Amino acid sequence: MAPYERFEAFQLCHQLALAVYRETAAFPKHEQYGLFAQARRAAFSAPAQYRRRFRRFLDIALGSLAELGYAIRFAHELGFLDSDHRAALDEAHTRASKATWVLYASMTGK
Image (cartoon, rainbow, N blue to C red):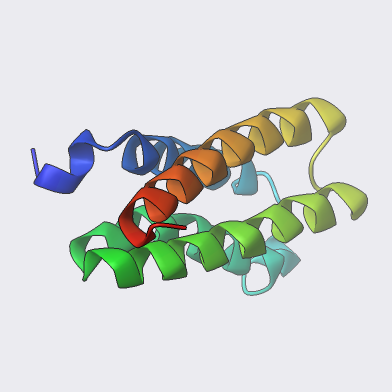
């Protein structure tokens, strides 16, 4: 196990990325290069950044999580996610975002 994998923030971001990939599989094919790809890119970016410089990673991960939050809302409002799936993704997103913010705050003294 890589050292960064012990952090709860990484584990929650990883679980969120897996959930987003599963949910976007049901999106319409015409969104393959639009919202489908953007949501997956943002979801994958948060846990993938752990390999880079750690504080810089946290900045990027928080930005990716903010982007993903909007992508989830947008997909729901377009009818690509039903309310139950949106709620599950929102919950995972909130947990991953909070854990990443706590880690960021502990590293930066904010």
